[in-house]
Length: 187
Ligand code: GRF
Image 1 (tube, protein in one colour):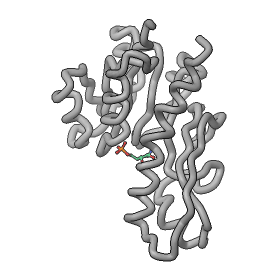
Image 2 (cartoon, rainbow, N blue to C red; image 1 turned 45 degrees about the vertical axis):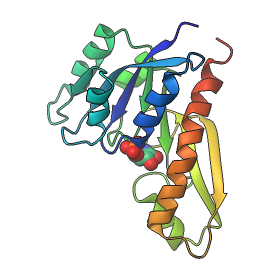
Image 3 (spheres, helix red, strand yellow; image 1 turned 180 degrees about the horizontal axis):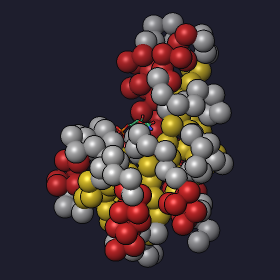
Image 4 (cartoon, rainbow, N blue to C red; image 1 turned 90 degrees about the vertical axis):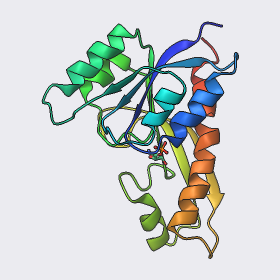
């Protein structure tokens, strides 16, 4: 199997990045992480680039043309597929149009419910009975795009924001690889 050269975009912890790196070591997993892009030079996820010797590009989003720099790097590394993993910026048409159906994201709610930030506090405030995560194709709107995989769990009365985050991220670790396998199954 020829693995798709993949770039993971991060801004923070990188727990999904770590999981994807570990899954991609499996010969049967369809992608190889060839590049990591971070818009945050203090992101903890950056350490995985060093640890696993994966090229890293830091982006300063205050520069007006930062997406052009991203596109240049994607070209240089011959990137075929993009995974957003806790990347806290909206990706514009410049990138999305070049990677149609080749760019996906994971969001910590059952979309279309609770788009945007602070999902866990809103889930609790609205007395939801269940929550979870969604992996979806990316377009230029916030947390939009066709859905690939959703995984949910029941919320217990003892849950709080912290436990919801832990439980949601446990589901993300299953859902994200599942979505990638789904995309490349028939290629
Ligand atoms: C994840 O929970 C994901 O749903 C959201 O941002 C969070 C970042 O997690 N998009 P990490 O950086 O992968 O640890």
